[in-house]
Structure formats: structure tokens, C-alpha cells
Image (cartoon, rainbow, N blue to C red; front, side, top):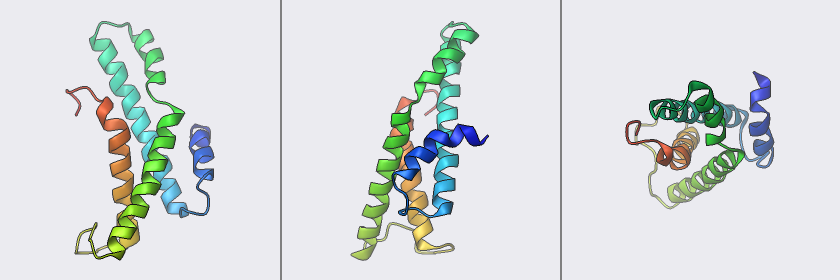
Length: 128
């Protein structure tokens, strides 16, 4: 299981010191899940287009890339910084009922917006 996170760990090393351990673990988990879902959606789509299961499985692996991870991380860092700046100047980017830490809410929002921007537009209309 650890080996599947090697590429993610390498990308996270580039922002070392800027993220908490919990953020890193959450990013690894959610990026990996997103990439696996895109692979599965691609495979299902290809099979529905009469591509053989073996060919669809092989082709689905190249439907996501290392660049996707880089894009998610760049967007994540930019959004998190932007949300913090907005908060600093009085624009609320999280709910008023703060049941959890404000910084964590900013991180979660930045993560999901980043994942959506990188992966959502790849989905077929049937999946979006």
C-alpha cells in the first residue's frame, strides 16, 4: 500500500514545511481516491464503447498522470493562501458555525475545489 503513495510523497516534499501531517495524509488519500475513480470511470466508458475489458483496463491507467497531482497541489496551495487572505480582510470563506478549526475548514475547502477543477471536467456527462 505504501508504494502507491510514492509519487504523491515526492510531490508533497516540494511543499514540505507548508503543510501539516494531517493535511499531507488527507491530500494523499483524496488524490489517490480521485485518480482511482477517474481510472474506473474511463475503464467503464471504454467498455461501454465496445473496447475489450483488457484494453480498457490498460488504457485507463494513462487517463491520470503525475501532472494531475502537481496541478492539484498547486491549486490547493494557491486556494488555501487566497482563502486565508480573504479571511484576513473580513470575507468569510467558511461557515459561520465553526464546529471545527477554521484553518482545517479552509484546507478542506481548498482541497475539494482543487480536486474538482482538476478531475471534474474529465467526467462524461453521465458521471458529472
